[in-house]
Length: 292
Length: 274
Image 1 (cartoon, rainbow over the protein chains, first blue to last red):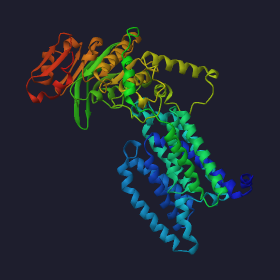
Image 2: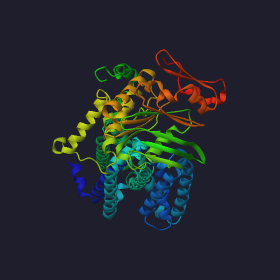
Image 3: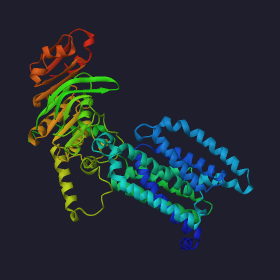
């Protein structure tokens, strides 16, 4: 089977190693992004990731340094601008276009320095997961594992704070700090995902598996695990597709699979929104005399 | 819970002062008054989220904020987001262990006595509020009354000695107001839980009330409902003639004395009841 020959190529095993970790982290972080209605934050951080990476290149630093510094700093900034650790649309919208313009400036600065630099912009925007070295893949996988560990540690109080902020605060959950730490995780995750699918497409990796998991189960911890599992499976399928059909860029293949899975859940799982059904059940909402 | 000569300032404005209230174990107290007078603020003070500027507040024998695990709290809210895909039982569970770090290990329940105890306790409170039929549905798909019952179960799950409820009947239609009020009254009587409830309308909870704290811009009055919700007391509080009428079914209607400055007084109690 030609698929098994894929593992003979170091570039493929590197992509698989980094991709698995990145997908798992994106799935976990994405579940909470969808739950907290902060998906837009992920999008904004994608733009920041682009600018950060190109700023680092233009100034002669490692691309990943720029990625992580830019996304984490902006995640904190978004949290500080938005009240109560929850970023709001105006705060994001007001910085967002300017950041992208700054990215274009750094791109010009960098690509005019040498002809070989011309593809840098494309690589950051659309990812180059098959171009990762062994060291880069290992670092990406380790950072992803750290993100997953922190999400697992915070999962229960973060869930409480996301669903029921006032009650969680009264119970002593540090909701504001949790919100900020979560945004830092989103920032780190965006920087990671940029290396796999690129800054323009990372939103799909954060939102599609999480959205599908939200539709497939209403048990929060199952949904969290399912979101990570779906993301990893979609990553593997995308990498396999891209290997089998080299015309397909890996980021396209990964997101095509992710979107297809989400669409499938959209078409097959129909959450009941019909409140006329509940009105009938409400009649036995009034306690029966035996209960009183 | 007790307040003695308590006063609070929010944003440089004294909301209320000279508030005395004594709620004994297993008593049901209502906090009434027009909008914006600081009823919810009183709950925040009791939770220790806001300091008082004068007087003394004790909650379950301790300073506010010290007895958090012995208090069940239901904040004021509108309905839950209909797209929230989390089961009612999971929301109840958050009240039990939602503040613990880490994720529950996916081990079968039979290997852990604590998991079994948690599961039984959750089933018990859900049964107590009569929500067993819909606790496994996503809470966003439940009706307002069903959501309120599940949230009361969440507040009850740790076996609190005091329930602080902020307008729990506000988002419900009239028939459900009566049912949820009856549920809260029953929990207070049978489980011996003290209840302090901010209310917009006193009538649904009137049969269970031991104490009333009436807040108005002119001051505060506390005591048994028959002594507080009277023409004399409310007229003095509002500083304008106010009339309290009693309908044939024993319901109370507060009517402002023709003076618009009396403001919220008339809003407090809906004349359409009864």
